[in-house]
Amino acid sequence: MSENEKLSYAVGRKIADLRKRKGLTQRMLADKIFTSDKNLSKWETGKALPDLEYLLAICTALEVDITYFTADEDVSAEISAARKIAKYKSSMRKWLSLALAFATLPLFVFAAARAYLPTELPVHFDGELNADRSGWVGELSIGTFVMFGVTLILIAGIEVVNRKFLADRLIFDRRTPMVFGLTLLLVDAISLAVTVSSVVVSYNAAAEQGLAAPDAQPFACVFASLLALIEWMVGCAMFAADRNAIFGFRTSAAMQSDRSWRVYNSVAGAYFCSYSFVFGAVMALLPQPIGEVAALCCALLPLLPLTAIAYFTAKHMLKRGS
Image 1: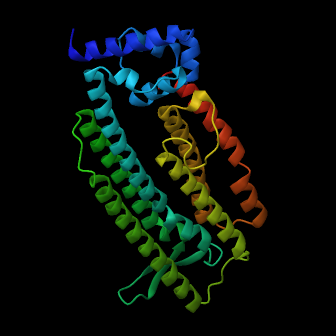
Image 2 (image 1 turned 30 degrees about the vertical axis):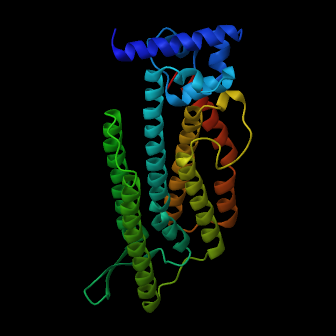
Image 3 (image 1 turned 30 degrees about the horizontal axis):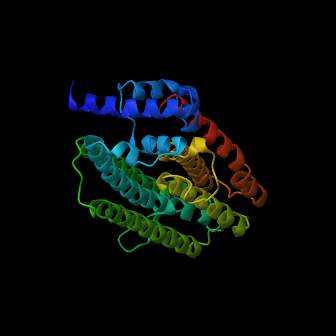
């Protein structure tokens, strides 16, 4: 029997003994920590080792301190290493989420500016910044979408590299997440500066040519863009959160696991970010700016359904042992 198998067997035996002393079935304990009884059976029989988050959730559900497991030196070392990895992953997740939160600012700048820009506007300029070609607003925003795509690729690449090294237990310096995050924020800042300058130059050129903006109320575009941006940033914040630290509401025992909260927050964040991005892109590229009623309905009405869908999707994923 290998060292890992011995460790899994020792932890599993302690879980099973304590569960039986508490008078709980595997299904009852699994429900308390929001996993499946199949997963719990694997842990108790030593076929797999529970993640640190699930181990802590088991301690909470069975009303014991983590020292119940750390009395064994091998288990204690394993938990110590897991805590270092969890802390590093949490820091990396926060920095990447922060960079992602600001990556779409240029998109929402375009969405808000739609009420001020004519449908056909100057999109290309010569060396002296004189407009030499007009076109659709989508042509002006191509650079914004390209930069957003580059940012997503960079974030995905960093995450892949990060997971590879973590899998080998090679922990980077604690400043590494900050370096990655600041680099991505610099890319975001460059993208925002390019976007704002292109909008301003195009707007001034359109004014010089006497091109009129659509007959729309600017407040509706700005308001809808701001709401979409807030939803995007809430989604990014949920990616970064370990549990309900941001929102602060009380939870049942079934959602006490950090893993459970990360799955729920990640799913909810994905829903919110996807919707707000599509909403922002549609506002930015529509031939005519969005109206006040449409802005309010599209920005606010989907919030409750999105939250419900995210919750039940995450619950299903957790029950499957994802």
